[in-house]
Length: 637
Image (tube, rainbow, N blue to C red; front, side, top):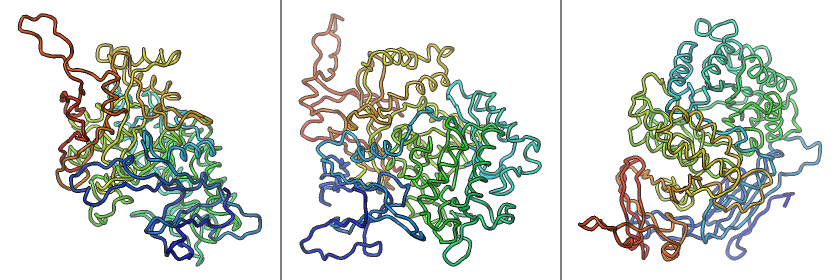
C-alpha cells in the first residue's frame, strides 16, 4: 500500500519492539531487495556443490515500484525477522502534501525458479514506469574510454572507426562511441581540445564520418556535472549544489572531484536541454552516453527549490533530457539511481566500471568486490542485475577488454565474454583495435551474434562462490510460433548457415534481423499479461531441426582450481523420469561389422558440447540419476 509512515514487520516473540533504523539494521538496500534462504547448513558447503535457489526456502521481495517522489530504503535485522521500509525526505521543506511512491511486498514459493524470484516485481515496476525495453534493438559497438581514457583525438577515433568498418565481416558493429576527453573541461562541452580536433564543426565531422561507415555515432556527456576549473563554474556558481554547511557539495568519484548542477534550478535545466539538443541536432549523434547523472540530486540544502526531494529533482532532470533528445535517440544512463531511470533510458549501466585487472589494484583496496574499477565487480553486478535486462532497458554491463594493455588472463577475458553473452547485455569493445591479437579478437567473434535473450542466474541468492553466481541457464528450443515466427525461423536458418552464404548474411544484417524481431523474442512488453515465469524471455529460438538445448555457463570465481557440481534440475526442465518418458535423446550403437542397418537406439542420455573448447561428450542418463551431478573442473576465474 502507499506508505504514510514506516512499516515494521517482525516476530513479536522474543524480539524487542524497537524501531529499526540505519544504525541498528544489519542489511540495507536501496529501492528493492530479494531475500531468501539457501536451505543448507555449513556442512553441505564442503563438496563445492552449487546450491540452487530453488533448493532453499521461499523468497521475500520488497521495495518501491518507482523513485519519483523519494528514494526508498529497505532495512532488515541480522536474523531476517524484522523489516523496515522508509522514504527519504532529507532537506525537504514541507510546504505541500508529501506522499511516498507505491511500495511492493511479495512472497514467492521456491518450488522451481524457472525465472528469478523477483520477476513479478520487475514487471510491475516496468509497467508502472512505462518502460519500453528494447524498442531500439540490440547494441553492439566500440567505446574509446578503456584504452585512450581522456587522451583521444580526431585521428585515433577515425582510425578505430575504419577498423570497425572492416571488421563488420565478422562482428556487426552498429555503434561507435566517443567517450570523455574531447572537451577542455566538463561543463564546457563546446570547448574542443585545440590541436586534437577539427575546430570548425569537429564533432559533426566525426559523427558524419562514423555514420558513413554504417554505424550510429555516439558521444559521452555528463550534463549535470562541471569541473572546478570550468568556465561554467566560474560564470554560474549559483547553479552548483551546496551542502548543509554552505560549501559546494562533494560529487566526486574515484580519482576526480567535480561539482553537481542543481536540477531544481530552471536555468540549469535550460543548460542541460540545450546541451543535449546540441549533441543530437547540431553534432548529429544518435547515441548518448550520459554519465554522473546522480550529480543532479546530491545531498544538501543549498538548492534552488528546497521543497523538492532528491528523487523529484532527478525525475525532473531525466524528463528534461528525454524531451531534449527526442524519442529516436538511444540514451545510455550511467551513474544514475536505478529506479529513477526506468522509462527514460534505453540502455543502463548496471555495474561499476570494469578495469584492466580482475580485482582492484594498488592504490585501490583489492578487497572491494562491487564498486571500484575491476572486472570482478563488473561481473558480479552484471549477473546480480541481469533480471532487469530486457524488462526495464538493455543492460549495459560495461565493456569487454581484449587488449594486451590489461593484466587480464585469457581465461578472465573468456569469462567476461561468457557472462556478457549469457546475460544478453550490450556488447561493447574498448581497445585500440589496431593492437588486438587475433586470438583475443576471436573471443568477441565467438559470442556474436547477440541472442537477444537473458539467461537466469540459478544461484543468485544461494552462492558461496565469493558472493558471485556460478551458474547461468538459457533455454534453446525450436521455434514453433506462426506468422512472424515462420519468418524468424527462415532468417535463423540463414544465420546458422551464414558460413555458406556470407555474401548474403553479413554480421551486420544478422544483427539487424535480430533487432527487428526482438519485440517478441524477449517475452516482455508494457501491459503484457502473460505469465512472467514463462520461458519466452530466457529461451532462444532456433531453426527447426536443431532440437532443444540447455545452455549453461559455469564459473569458478575462487582463487584456486575447483570442481563444480551441478544438479540435474539445473540442466533440464523435467525430472529424469519425465525427461526419458518425453523422448530423451538416445545414442546410436556402433555399426555392425557388415555395415548393415543398426538396430534400436541404445540408451537415453545427453549430448554435451563445450562451447569454448569445442569438445563433445555423450552422458548416459543413468549417470545423472539419484542426484549424481554433472562435475566440471575449472581453473580460477
